[in-house]
Image 1 (tube, rainbow over the protein chains, first blue to last red):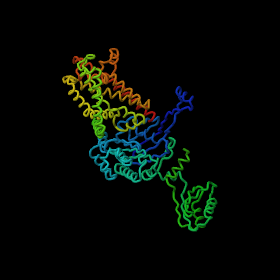
Image 2: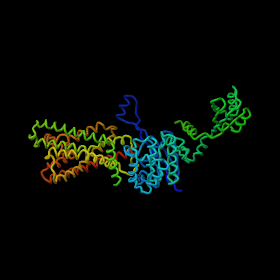
Image 3: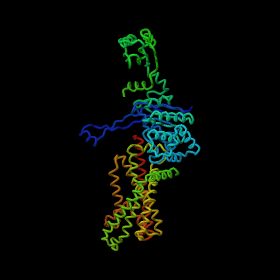
Length: 342
Length: 265
């Protein structure tokens, strides 16, 4: 399959005014100004194949939006090349924008005072959508999202979730080859989130739409993206399958167990076991419990042999239930973000 | 082209969806007409036969009322539509759509203007015809009036557009917008007919583009120009200023978009 997005050594540098403090400093600023250059996006490389769903992750201020702006052609890269759908997004903007859809979570492209359908009619003309495609897509939206009853309501009367559904539908109306979703589920309830995910999945399956998704909602990423691209401080941090990400960045296993015969010294003994089995004299993991019976503990696999630990537990206690699992993407992301000290 | 017709249509629909605004603006206009009537009557010492600066009361009064009608047609608060887009950098996001921002704004403005034209301007002009029939001359001049109205629309649009864009440098346009409003209305002869101005000031005003927005179309409607060739000259000057201002606004727009695209929103 051919790459629909190819980003090579993409770089964006902003000039930022370095303000001096105090009254005298402010006066100095009026006369001479110091500018600092900041690399918001620094030598990023990645490729996306047609039909892929990519979760674009990174902490706040990592350069996600800047990258998306460059990919959509509204921001000029300082250096490097990005080719999207065989266009240079910035140079061929006018032709290029016809084939993409963009949803910015906090902004709406609908006409605030008019019924939703009027915005759709306008989009139909703007993008030269044929009747067939237009009605076909409206039908999908009706079936999947139950949008029909919203068509005739003015946008200002819609709830945030309803508006977001309509907004995403609007950006899919012209069958874009690629769609950029910047925080599409921000502030929405579970049911609306679910419907949005269903819609994205469906469009990906039916039309083979390539989807670039940024979100801080791990649920979105887990349920949609097979692949994640993580950037941090403008640099590419990880690019690959999401379970690979978990393997690479987490040597932590989550152990949940429940003890049948507890007494006052249970917790002390448990801690002793943890200290005894720690092979590198590393940090002793914290035990968490609500009722003194059910414990959870996240242990590092470099410091502990899981089988040894389980054996020790079973030998000493009557274990009613034990559960060993990988920690969730959310926890790993948190660890990565924190480790990189942001 | 068809997409911009849809912009006009949608903008008209918005105007119609605000019923109260619609009726209140008609009411406001009626009140203003009554005010102007008595104000100018006082200027004429309550003597309708008196002639000041070569014009009778009925000519002056109809001039002012026509100016008001045209004002309703032209005024769509365009700079206030642009300002938030420019300040928040939304303007660059709007470029993600395959449309021209300036042109789509023009279409939106036209939609609102068409509403006002039907609801306010036409009734106002009809009212002038009824109250002082000598105020509007129906003849060949109507053709020139329509042409000059088109140019004055573009002139006014460009000025508003430029003012809206200055938000990029100043972050707020309230002061600039109000100042512009006062200058345009005053120097274009929309508030006080230009023949009331002293000779020297009038020479200066002749050289500025503003009078082509109000004064020229009204003069066309009142048939104050002596000959057809004078009307042609006036229209030609309008064309000249329109081209100049379209160029300025376009260059300014492209510069700002370029800056936004390099520096970020």
